[in-house]
Image (cartoon, rainbow, N blue to C red; front, top):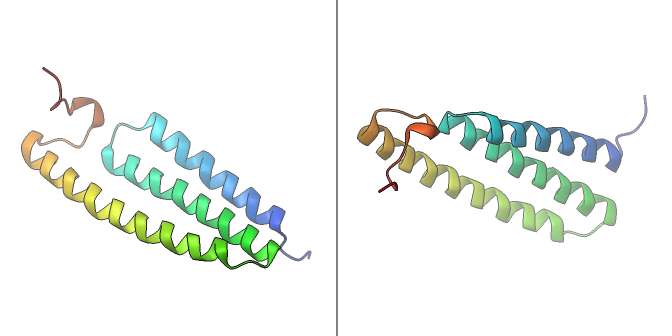
Length: 102
């Protein structure tokens, strides 16, 4: 059994980034798109913390905390908008929401 290195964290982060990007690009459900964005933000956090640990610098960990608080605010606002859209259009499919069309 080998010790966990920075490369292991980067592989995990790349996998999360790939899953999140595929989810954003291929799904039509707004809830799944929001969850995919959260996966992408978690991949960023893993990168920040892995490099912070490797370089022995706390800046990456502090920045990761800011990313987490931003993700929480984004989730709250996104879900609020999603609830308002569902009440208006009675759907959560991204391609059926056309409020900005003329």
